[in-house]
Image (cartoon, rainbow over the protein chains, first blue to last red):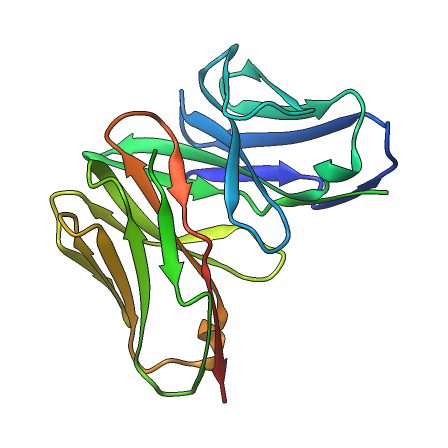
Length: 114
Length: 112
């Protein structure tokens, strides 16, 4: 079966510090991978998606970047965090199986920038 | 640009009631629509997925319908239980592009 791992679950970082959040998927190959952010009281906003190794598309300009060094690994990074980067970050993947494309999400990382 | 709206934003009902959550979208050229559940501080759990060619999907006490022409979907929860308390999100995948567009969610509380 397919599973998605996302860590850490919670993170408190000072302004100006770097960030690295990691997401890995098991049990599938060549998935589409996504990073979403959920700010308090707001909906999910797509930040980045990737259709393959080294292929990253950014949906919104921001202080963050993403990388996909391996087929099933997706990393969200920042060189210098801002207060506005605080939020709940979710990794997701989609798979096309039996004629259906379905999305699955990780458990999320709660990032607080202080 | 696809926009997804969920009404109501919050809902509180006594245990045992049947309830309907609403989701509307502006662009009817969708590939599929997915309903998710999110518990506080947790990730999203997929509940039901409806392909654009389908009109409804059922799983246990949950039934999701889709009216693509009018840009609407509903999630029906029968005989609600306190364990159903969570935020319910609908998301639409368009025919073009790889992304899901989410609604703002409905925060449901079922009181014992």
